[in-house]
Image (cartoon, rainbow, N blue to C red):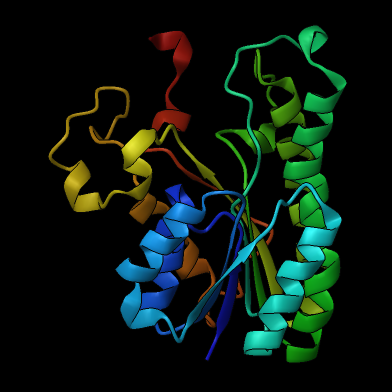
Amino acid sequence: MRHAVITAGSKGLGKKVTEHFLEKGCSVTVNFRSDFARVEQLKREWSPYLEQVQFVHGDVTKKEDIINIIEQAMNRFGRIDYLINNAGPYIFERKKLADYEDTEWEEMISGNLTAVFHFLKLTIPIMRKQKFGRIVNYGFQDAEHSPGWIYRSAFSAAKVGLVSLTRSIALEEAEFGITANMICPGDIRGEMKESSIEASKGIKDGRTPIGRSGTGEDISRIIGFICDDNSDLITGSIISATGGINVVNRNAL
């Protein structure tokens, strides 16, 4: 049985990714940060899968918590086939760089870039022994082009750095049957993060050329495909899922 480690896998996009792997028959270690009530709810909701899933509390900005997540995954399931780095802190307040507190900058870099480094350091040796592994990181729209993002400087700096790290790992680990890719979701908001494609088709969204919002199911389907055993040709790729927003000529609007 293939096993996935999914950070922040109890809500938002991560919840739909977790469901995708459970439905495929995989086992999953779900990391969560603080929402214990949500975990209890999910244990009821996912009751048919309780033999396949475990929940591990931990903050990805803390190295000791990352170590514990990986140790718990190996103790329970004995392997790690998929590492889905879904977690990543984000500051919603619109702030210029000069107005950031040092602690805010450090949290953005630690949670969105350094945490991935620690997860990779622990997970890659396991995947090498297996001669198989799929690593999926998250970016933002156009991250591969190193754009400026006003009021989001710390988050964007971390994610743009993660683009290069993703591609570097793809090259370094290819000989071991390990792939590394990045998903760049479009503007998927609120309840749509846990929604289905079918549900989104009934809600008009004028922001996207395709006319509907993206959903958690869109992201989980892409991740499921690039994690397939036969998807090893896809590695070092930065994959946008935006409904066409990323190809719009903004100067023409």
